[in-house]
Image (cartoon, rainbow, N blue to C red; front, top):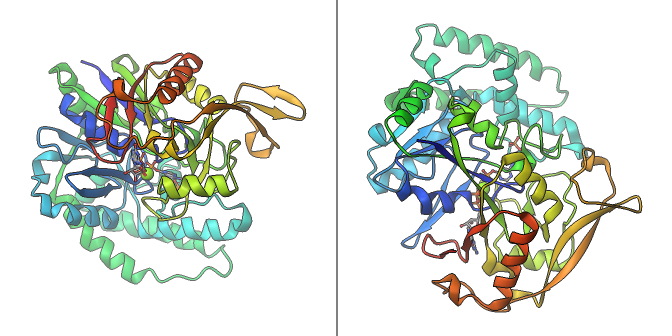
Length: 422
Ligand code: GDP
Ligand code: IMO
Ligand code: MG
């Protein structure tokens, strides 16, 4: 069997949680491969809205197992909060949620370092979610990190103290940054016991055995391609590989095991946090989009910046990920516009550019836009793509021609049921 991959093609929040939940009945295992509590994946069904941060989005479907892979970073405090919110659903977490012993732990002092670093950057800040993501991945690559498996070692306390001491020394270099670690630390030590009580496994072996045993695996990405540490709009990115290649390193599955790559994009574009956004609408139209799409961060509540769909960016993301099929999300939100714009190219220093440039963070970019007719219809009650308005079909067909990848799903509302298959 193969591992199918589902990931975001823009700056995150494309609707990955919803689509994973919709697709889970076709899989045996849902596995997160990177990121951590910076993610906020929203699912809606039967009138319930649920936001997940670390737990994979297959958790509400009783037939699937959920794995938190080695590439994920876990904050025991955030994680315990998620477990609490799952309590009313009576899910047997001990058997349905498996955690890699190789996943790294976010310490309270990682969160402090994240905050200190952002404060020191001032206007140049990344707009981090302040969950400690950057410092934790820095300790991972710097070979100082603590992993879930370490929790079971008699030397754990000593290892923790050693790393904390390093962090406190670093914090001394941030002038004017004050903190009190005691409350956070007490809570952290309380909550690691909840993590230890779950099933911690050698997830690389587990997943490869599962593949041999013909189990169907869906890898769930977090963030989006433009936030990838290598291919995103550096330095305004997160600290992990959010692209298809991240599945291999984040789960321990070989490249030859990758099957379908399902790329998700909004019918427009959003970004939360700082950094370049060539098709951004910093005006009334953008505000209208934010209001209609309820574009506020699922993790931080911050307003998301909005703009038109950007084909230069999207084609780049499809290329890097090897996308084999697409899901277009939030088509309903564009139902308010007479005309819908699509960014086809960038004008940079008087030149027309169609390949996403290296130095996008430093360039003055003018988006070159094409106008398409809007559908001006409420799509949220649609149950079949065949009944969709012609203008929407024209939009979808146009994108398929431009992107050279089929759009298999069009989403017309946040609920599980508001999903049109093509
Ligand atoms: P993720 O991080 O990619 O899982 O996405 P988020 O959950 O952060 O943000 C997507 C938001 O859009 C959530 O509030 C979803 O409930 C919502 N959503 C998903 N699909 C649709 C859709 O087709 N239409 C509308 N109106 N909302 C959607
Ligand atoms: P999901 O999985 C949208 C953004 C932050 C910031 C940058 C770095 O819900 O799509 P970090 O905390 O990772 O150091 O922040 O990345 N960011 C996200 N934006 N969706 C996310 O996740 C994000 N995770 C991080 O806003 O700009
Ligand atoms: Mg999100």
